[in-house]
Length: 226
Length: 86
Image 1 (cartoon, rainbow over the protein chains, first blue to last red):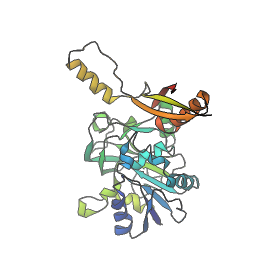
Image 2 (image 1 turned 45 degrees about the vertical axis):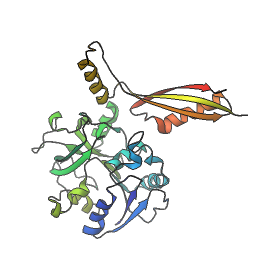
Image 3 (image 1 turned 180 degrees about the horizontal axis):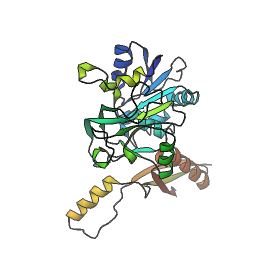
Image 4 (image 1 turned 90 degrees about the horizontal axis):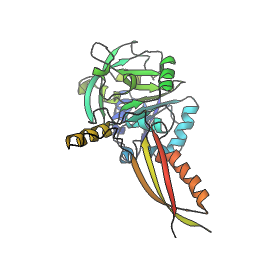
């Protein structure tokens, strides 16, 4: 698989992703400067975490107009894979590739932690190497990770199986106590209807190397490999 | 013939969106002794100058700017003033 990692001014998790796709999984990986427009050579486009454009105005609001985004929207419309992690998730909602929005954490604090996440199902190209309802541990690091959408959108996400990841307890309980940022329905990550675009607040790329303590995130990347 | 307009854009959270910063400020005001304050919501104020043929054109362009960038329609409403600069 050919991976491409977008770099906006202010992105800072780009090299961590390449460390996994290239360094650990030996897949062809290149960085995509935000002003490039030719991404035809790529299978998977990843929009990394960070603070694109300083999070000015709204997180991802300005990045979504970078030249590369037109190509990424076309890439997604062609059914190819797009993954947005953290700031990347914010860019995807601002670009309209995913519904809803990410707003300020419920308790206003920037949260840097390693928490249990439930894999809702594995009928997705992104989670096929996991068990359905499996509980994993992913790092989170965000101040605006509170997923919000109107009631009818939330119902659609539930009905279509678009919610892939939820915040939960170590035992898999899904409730407000184990929701770090107040996001609707404890949503930590969703796909679009077709399932080829995934946005998630946790950082799977930071949980893919046993040298860093845990590698629950690795299966997300290996799920994509042929 | 073009005209310059001062514009003041007010971006506010939609009522259905939880405003955690507004809640924090409200509790701050209560602690200061202003117990009668309720429903504090915090929005954004953006100023800009736009050059356009006429008020109608400036108005249309500003709506487009707000729809595309200045406000996120999923979570925000907006309104603006357009004042010609002599």
